[in-house]
Image (cartoon, rainbow, N blue to C red; front, side):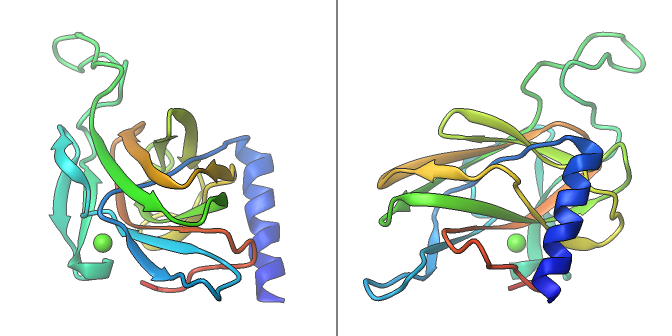
Length: 192
Ligand SMILES: [Ca+2]
């Protein structure tokens, strides 16, 4: 029953916002994946990005986050393409990013969940780019607390290395963790 309620809420959110979304990672942790499993799940902490974060994306400690850390774009850091409030110079189209690389051993259709923290309606989304495919992640109306959001767009992930880029779309946002799963009924709870 709970799942149905969650699904209804997600569909409602999609209808209201018209948003779509996308995906993850680096240094992946394969949590539950054996030859006998019906589904494959890949768990990636947002702090386990590859290489360096792209400014103004930054790493932040948060006791409410899984592993005690998350990535964060501070409110007022600027949105890609928007003019700087003082100089008027536009921010670049890529302004703040984290890149994740992960290995898929079971190719298939994956859904991406992200544990996120939105400040408000002007800070409630990221851009996800999965293997070059770009979507909007988020745009829900629950603020000021950690919540799981589902990327409404599933992704066909091939075996081998995959790349997920998390880009600044709106400042005032945080991302704690990503879960990629082939289980369409999976709904994460808490820090998972
Ligand atoms: Ca985390």
